[in-house]
Length: 406
Ligand code: UDP
Image (cartoon, rainbow, N blue to C red; front, side, top):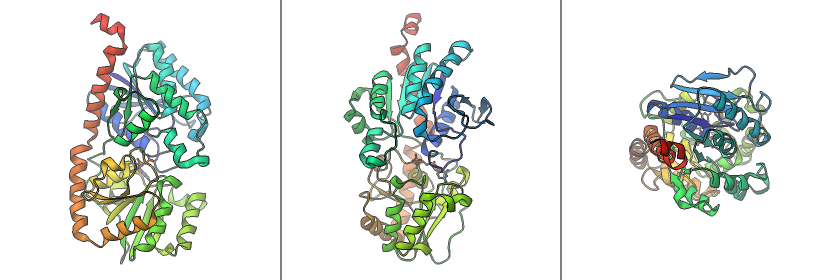
């Protein structure tokens, strides 16, 4: 199959950790590589955000990344992209109509990609599959006035769901959110992300430890909803432990980052400044060494559409303390691979962190069960095979010309 992956802001080639570069980038990169591994012809369409980017580039996994000229060739936040989605769609449709490559199926990632995908795909009669990665309705519920998404986001997400052939939810919790949005249950299929099992393994180098301190590691874009403030507060209940925060801008630029400065000030106010360390962005290839260096990984988001980082830790055999939200309630099995606590509750979080650090046997048991679970349930080839079946199912139903020809 010729598969067009649309990922307007999240390029599979981007450096991760910054404000708009994280799980979606990893997901699109890994899924596309796995689809290419199944023999499909995969192109990823992402916005050209730098004049130095070539029009097309191979990833080395058999995937071609196409840089779409839509809006200025410079970095824009994702909240600024909506006005450029019309151009994005027309450019893709023009290429597909004029050239020798047109998709058999279009898979859109994030809501704005969905808008562009639906518009472009109708020109070539291709079915569209949608993965939201994050829903505007959930974001608004949790962030209220802080939510800077365009006002039309939720109604656009509803319209996309009506137009596309299938909506892929990444976890069970997202199904309920989609149904609440008015999506027919039969249109939704749950297909979780995977984890790169070659990169994330228990064996291999580990980053140096700080003598005399147990290590808790947390990873993510430096945004409030990831719960770093709660983790810093919780550290007050955990003696002899440090918390390393990976993510954000590169280490050299942390001092200028307003949220990194806020976290540093908070650590001082909470009396744990000597035990909180911001490491900045880490290249994807070095992430496993950081997970392996930790006694436990903590993920304390307010909400989380999927949450790759706890799964990456699990694949490294590291136990997880997480908040019981979104995808984390599917990946982390409470009392088996880790501990789940309510979100935004530093006291409960601190008790869980301390309990796990104080119990070496439980850490070993959780780590082994976490590794088993990651290996058995979250392989990218499994995710790709399930989505391949979704794509194949759609084609006859939505491409009448092919049914007639067959
Ligand atoms: N990541 C990375 N370097 C960093 C911070 C994060 O490579 O400095 C990667 C991390 O390994 C994971 C992704 O970014 O693959 C974050 O995904 P997650 O689903 O946890 O969060 P999201 O960014 O989707 O909110």
